[in-house]
Image 1: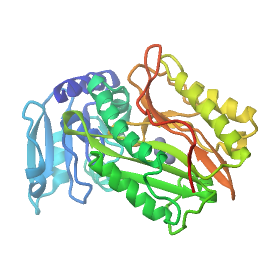
Image 2 (image 1 turned 180 degrees about the horizontal axis):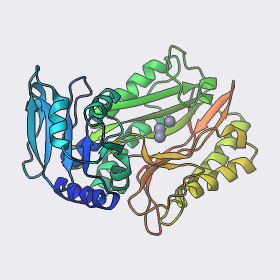
Image 3 (image 1 turned 120 degrees about the horizontal axis):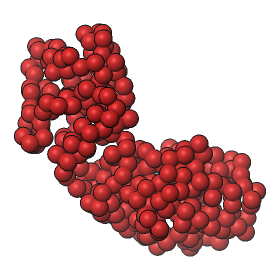
Length: 368
Ligand code: ZN
Ligand code: ZN
Ligand code: ZN
């Protein structure tokens, strides 16, 4: 698998005139070699020349973490008193164009530019994103497993199994996190819990606010679950519950959101430009009078990263292809009052979308 990915990126390097690919911290490195660099101050860098074999520069004390894959890369360790930039410079050699991982610490890029003044540096994502954003069958199954685990937590929330009234948002957030782990995630990436007017802030930070009867509670949570190649894949789901009977204006707005989100999921098929998927739902929400209350893009790609290409946003003309995996998460936010969002993870198919999220899509009503 890693050999295949390496072959494919090398083919792109030929087409793009890139001599060497440099990957450090971030999601590109594990995608191509199965190793995730520690996001610390010591340099880890996979150097992939277009024609020569790849070498992984790694601090000696972190080398024991590396799963050796001699068919993919050679390991080159450096000691505390060595200069890893010098090591990298030696491997980059006579390259004139280098593509460097977008998440590489800026400090290392500045140092490399200093010792390699004639090398032109480009963003590695120009090469890695086109490969990473199309998920193969094993990756889709990894995303499906992560989505299913998050679904089970959402189902518990919707069934009223997670106490809400009288608890703080932070307490509920912690419980969502514990449940994500209990359902098999290795890591919790976020667990937004926003009650009442706080739900009008899409990325609300759960706090000491106590949840009361008569309120809507928006929960948006996800984590990372071990997947194909030993690399983790992300889940991400948003569901809203209402404590007691909701006022008609909220039920009506939810109905608009529900229909818009379903239309966007249905539009997630190959050949459809990303912006078109955004427009389909935005038009319906605007038609209902909430155009100014849908204040963010429709969604983001998802894979080994919680947010990656492709972005489902106005202006993104990229056409969906089978294997594109992304969120569909429109929202309606009324500042000072309430907010609603509904989020699924969808994989574009040839003529039908594969919706990985199966938790009930309705506004769950919980006795309070
Ligand atoms: Zn978000
Ligand atoms: Zn989310
Ligand atoms: Zn999301």
